[in-house]
Length: 449
Image 1 (cartoon, one colour):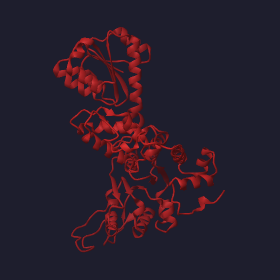
Image 2 (cartoon, rainbow, N blue to C red):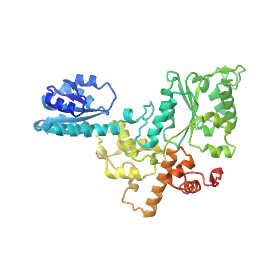
Image 3 (cartoon, rainbow, N blue to C red):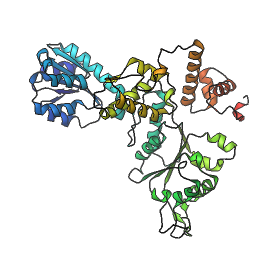
Image 4 (spheres, one colour):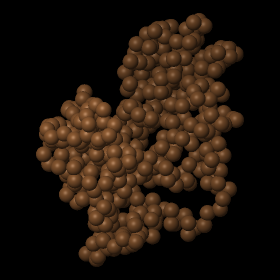
């Protein structure tokens, strides 16, 4: 913990040390800033009794803004008349104590502050950092398993296939795997196979030579070649046309490409990570996706959990997004109303994390109050004002239990069914009734063991 005080108390420091704290002293704001270079979760105690100049307050505010430190302020009651200090305490401190206060009280509040920071410090304690729209955050079992898998995949060069609904953060996972691999200093190149017209996809992937077609005035390097030495992320691989699937399969087998209009084979060393929200088992069954290509791409499969199946993460992620984008509003947004939290838990989040980010950002800009309400989020129809039947509650609980079991066991039906205490056939039937599979399709999974 960091103890910021112009005149630190030895008896308090000794008491905290005896109760397990590793106390680091800071006699000035500059000292505290140096101690905070680490991103580890920590508790902080700031003693305001020594007084801070107006020039120091700006630097102090920058210290208190650090989201990985749970600050507790101690101050004489008279100083609470200072509007500047009151604002700092209100906006940036986990709690405060009026002096005189006992060492026991300080120790208790510091412990609570540190506990909350440990719970919510996603950049370090619970997350894999990424450099995109948002960090990967989560504390549920499925996300913790995902983080462990990412760390393991950083030590291998195997091809990875990421399955999950739209908006769950598949590209963030791919980027996190790349940044933990030996290829991290080489390019990470992403291409959305569903966003490029089919007749252009071949040239986007493999490039072309000058004169290959009308308008090809100069040579162009394709995405595969541009990712040489690094990682190529093929998003929405399920939308890849069969012609391009054949070319990609040949590259994966030979490690060489030919630019459109060229004759030379070019060796390219690149790791392939692919992702899609499409059920490729169904696509292969229908002949829309090559099974031999799938097995090349899916050496290791990673399942991204949908937001609705992540339990407490819904609230944690909402606060994380608020913390990141709260400066978008001129007014100081302090959090969410109870009805907003309730509505977020009741809502199904079809757009997953991407939808969460968009709803919270829009609410930050449009809200009239200091707390974001269910109405600000556009979720006012999902509060307890709407009655819910017992049958609906049971159905929701059943769906959630099935989703979590499937995620825990990576969609291995036998193991998920055993975990749920039902037969595999019953599980498959329930998956259909809850919309967790394509009920129009009949596969071997439907047959009894």
